[in-house]
Length: 304
Image (cartoon, rainbow, N blue to C red; front, side, top):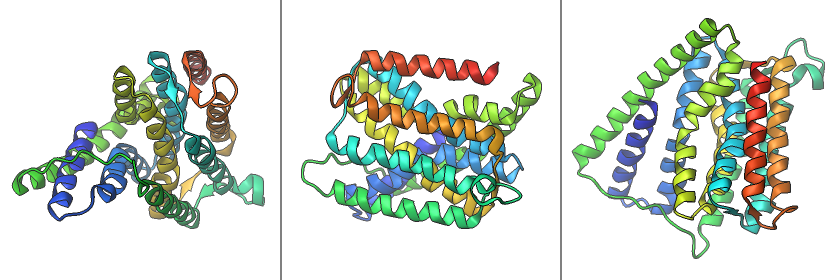
């Protein structure tokens, strides 16, 4: 329901925007980009509203780790991933900055000597400020000649509205069921909601990125995957976590969650190193196998 809802919302809203003569570039960088991140946003919203912040934070961290190690790993095994120089020196460092920013805003006890650690509304607004800067940068990049635009089809108005309404309904109810099911799994399996958020929920909400990347690799267009993954990681922290924290502050269990933050930072560093050490401007099958094996070891470490 969540994935179909996100797809319906993107298609319907993009069609309406096209009717209103909104440029393809703007649609791609706003409606489509935000729509593909809506599964994480909805799942996190319900997690926080139902008093399960560990599930929400675990989802963000787990999604970003899975994006690099699992999704890029599988994609590179299928077909080597070409990486543009601008991605290596700008987008990948931005994703690393997002991970470090999360560590800084969340660790009040470690850095400020506070009595508790939390991601406050102020922290959320700071993250959203970074998101605005990233969007401005993305718009400037996309304006350059030769950039691909979204392939957007126009549907009848009634059908577009129906897609939007049905998409929102699917996101709402699917997100609610998703969080309730994940919490029930945590209780029945005797594991923490943090672990469920890092694994089941994270992989589930990352399915759009996984499907897109695998299809792109099979069509020998694997270079699409790197932008998909890096952009998603930046969105997850700056936009989704920033939005959720602005609505309701998130308590942060530093003793446990920092381990996953360090893994996320390590994955971003490994991504940068992989594009420079083994094969320049490319993530080959060797790196893909290392990434996928590292993710398997990470899952094993979580469940031991």
